[in-house]
Length: 113
Length: 113
Image 1 (cartoon, helix red, strand yellow):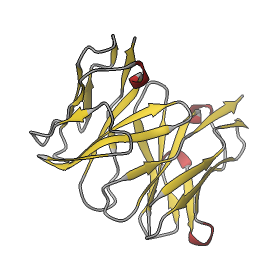
Image 2 (cartoon, rainbow over the protein chains, first blue to last red; image 1 turned 60 degrees about the vertical axis):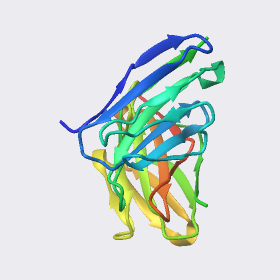
Image 3 (cartoon, helix red, strand yellow; image 1 turned 90 degrees about the horizontal axis):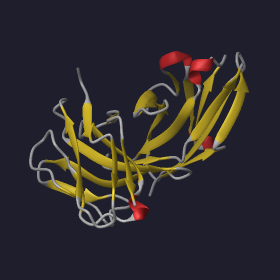
């Protein structure tokens, strides 16, 4: 089954404790992206990757890091989480070219205390 | 630069009534336009997309949208609402280099029995 898998789905952590949210896709997609969803703000892009070792900032990259060492994986790293990073995070993937739709994971709800 | 505006963060309709969710876009080049739906506690899934072929696009679950270049609109409609249509709907645009997908702020649809 074609899917994007995120882990963990739910996480409560404390300010400053590094965490990683993993994302993996099994569709051989070149393009992967992270979004955060906040009430009234819709989805905002954090980082995206056009292919292995090719990443770039989206609209709200501050406080986040990513890496793309393998085509299927695109982890999101919060080196020193702060309460304003409490949000619902989505990973998505698609073919790099053309009008391909985005395939989304089920989301990771992060709370930073 | 590209942008999407969704009018109305909340829309309520009676079961069996017409559903109309509004989306206006801004793009300096011909865009690709999408509608995604998000059911509670799930990721987003594609409803339909416009890719410069037919201006009237039919999607899943009886939804359709019409691309109107003169009005820069891509409104989503469904003739008769079902209870199962209650969800949040996002309009999105891709323009230019296909790297960036910009989402609207979302419209929550409530269906009243």
